[in-house]
Image (cartoon, rainbow, N blue to C red):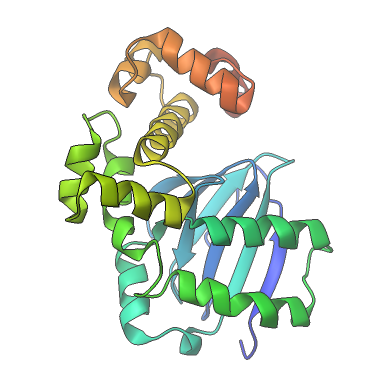
Length: 242
């Protein structure tokens, strides 16, 4: 592709594997996306997006009302070091500025965003995910938390992983994500639990335990608060054939 583009998209319950010769960011603006990239699965939502490198195979499925900002970008606009890092770690904690931009662009419509908006907003996207981006030094620990959210993750442990003091860690998380470290952890635990509800037959009590909740009722409260559903309702909605 010769020029970058922003598109607002909805995805159905399934898709075939797609590949393209340009880079792409997938940024949820409403709902969530079950996403597979080169055989690796992830669940994307308002706090977690993905980067698709050129020629990487990917597929996705979502609900009818879910919506996503797709940022298509020629790979030549991304420096080699940043591209290599994004290829190694394509599932991304979304910086607060990127989330706010996606919400603002979604309000503009229509589905294909005007070129002047792309020209205005793309530099901020490139900067946010560059090596100098405010969230870059936190991406690795966010990925480790997302992979094993049920482990104990006190602030002190996260701070050691990042190599800063606990007080400095709070500042970094607030600057990058407008969340505390424990707020990020809570979102990661709930995301992991949702993926297990949608994709496995594990008992809800076991999912709650493995996600790091003290008991099943704690998972129920969190899911009802954030998604207005109980775990059983969420499972039924996302596994209609069960």
